[in-house]
Image 1 (tube, rainbow, N blue to C red):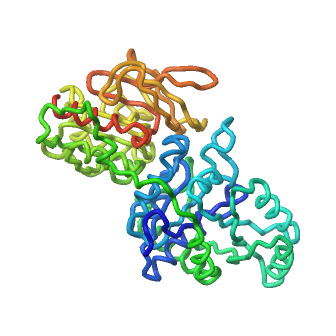
Image 2: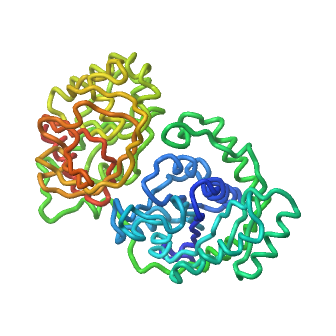
Image 3: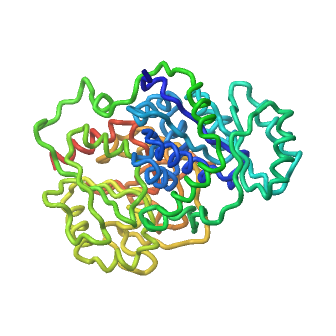
Length: 460
């Protein structure tokens, strides 16, 4: 019998971004699911978009494994939490195999996560412009870190049968088996824009077709039996699965009215697709009645809303539609004015501003937002500047920034976070019950955030 700690698993990695990891990982997930297997989908790093495609491929929630945001000690437990009851887990890597957080060595790299999971790695190589040199490349990646076990190679963008023969002959010298060969296939491409792939929620029908094409290509070109055998060679994990209820429990936790389940509205729909599943699970475990709503279509907040969570996404793409929904904008502003807890990240921050690219938004914050050409991207070490509905002053968290927008001013009279970056700065806004910031955070790293938010919802 397979236990959660020994679930078969593979990490899909590559020498660099653009090699085909998403195509192979998503295709593998869908191909294994088509065999009737329960497949657990995971993504290394803070990315929100790939897990949407993973969820479409498997019918399960796509989950992130980020050793920077959550700490290395939570990677195994969070993995086991997602993989409960599954026959196989597929973990899509990030960037190149050994690329981690800037200046932090291997931390949060695909290789680091593979070692934490005791999982074999399948290296996806873009072979479009090489033949015999592929052996040198694979040899380098195999030998760089002896603790990383590269168990197979999948060759992507192979031009012809003759090209495939040359590649296979070269790789025989490395001793690493070729577990798949994929030809170039435009139909599996997914469209991109200013922050990467277009989320599944925005192109549902086309996304379904793309995932089906990925599954067909992987099924035709890969040795699924060989890949399953490799997945079964993963080592047993000694940790226990993460549990939201256990995470939010505390010896000093004494809710004012423990039997009350305050309703927390969580923004969703096409404009707000960025969220970590564990954040919502923690809210529920802390006693909230979590109800989703769509700011593009719903003209009212869910009845009885006591708190509001607005995560990340692409409000800049839907600015006109969000602005046109004046009844909801007013409802959000009224809720914030009442002092109810409101937690907003990145897209949520923009939505709470006075305007976005000249279009009226909720006006909760006396700040304007606009699109820019500059990409702001990177991990951040943060400390809560003062008390808020999310954190007590001095609370330390790690987060991630990823946007092409700017808010002026960048911080309120009471900032949300102090950031340790090359230029130390404060950012975000805390006013009454509102906590708004560009920083994306994973609450599993600090479950007290969810507990504190729900307690404030009970008493506000």
